[in-house]
Image (cartoon, rainbow, N blue to C red; front, top):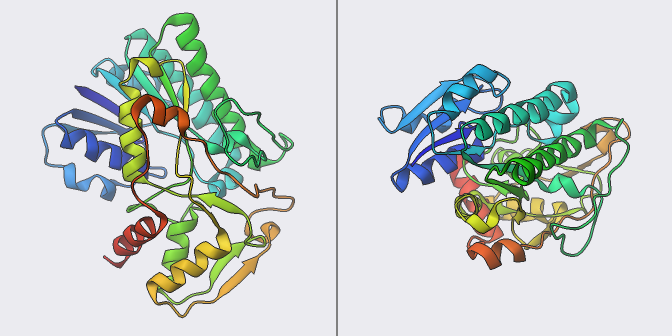
Length: 319
């Protein structure tokens, strides 16, 4: 197989590249390095089966060229992280909507199988015990930049589904829930690497809000395994799948666990959302996925627990 990974120099994309190369695929990575980093893929630079193309998914001619050369597409290129979305909402919207539209158009033109990564942000303020793929979306005002990412990714999902239904494109959608692991930075609001970075320097761990909001963190290794399996399963086409862990933890407990595991002398500091992001910022109190659909189809079941995930990030940052 020859495979295109858009956003392949990013955190998840680079781990996906590793997995595909390890099993013998050839890869082309398309990345504009806006949030991706060359150091994430530098260990592939001398390989004949790995090619890096510097460029944006907004460049239709370039996307046409690389899609025409591969058998399948993994579309991960996106503006990611709450912090980036809040700071650069217009740029994020263009990348996440127009860029995705271009990639789907070219995948259809050349009849290539495609998987697009969406997000748990889709569910918005829905705090159900176990969010399933058909659950309602509960969003705040479209004038709050917090929700522009959710809206953009919803349009991506609609494009994928409609291309499958109307044009027969072999498209799969995955919604990712807080994927964590080595190479992830805290630069764009990613909480585990940010806490680890602070703890290793004995700095205050800045917990936003009251710290009682909960999330479920999943290893990037488990997530990329699920991505590949779903991309290649014919019964996944035209469907959406949650990929994540069901192990729930509050941000306050997460911070305390990281302090304990690193032996840090850091203290917790609560920071109001208005200070951390912007006035009127809205967050979700819970986000717990149901992963039954992915488990039933491809056997998806996370193998790494939260301590394993934290340890992998600590080890990565210490080296």
